[in-house]
Length: 248
Image 1 (cartoon, rainbow, N blue to C red):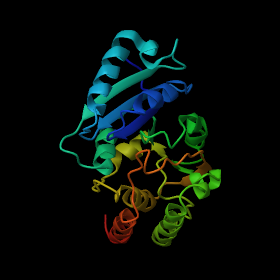
Image 2: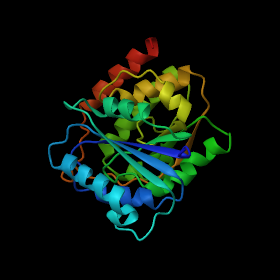
Image 3: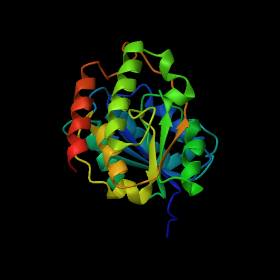
């Protein structure tokens, strides 16, 4: 019987052919036994084919498929494709359902976040100090060095979210949401797209789970590099905050 991995990494992927190899290499360097659940959201840039190649090569050759001589810790790769394109929230929801780890983390595929932060993110949970950990770009100091519009939008949306949840977060919109596996697999989530972050935050708060933040590194990419979120998406997030403040 295969032992349950300590960590499940859920990666929603949409048109990230240029970054997925490096991301998986960085994840493989983390010294924690883990499974990686990749959910391809109907990519159109060749990501789908690249993921299939990587999964096949990894099954046959292990670490060398990721450009490494050896793995830092046991690693399993699981690939799922959802079609048609349904959005990040739907991809994460699918990924959560396929995890088996003691701890689950959400990882974007664009290299804005650094997997070397995993040990700091999982420690409060493994030590019994928290049920959920948010990786804060603001505490890490990197969020303010990106686009000022995105920075202030995030501060405002986090403030509004806090008013309803009472969590006192500094970075509600962070990709790095980490939680006990049974919490991730038990959440009843509905949002398919940018409503995912406020919805999961509201439901974590409503569930009475203990939440802490830890600082993380962040390298925000430009729109020319493929950044997808736009200012108008902030209105979608705001509507979701108000919606999930009122009902499950």
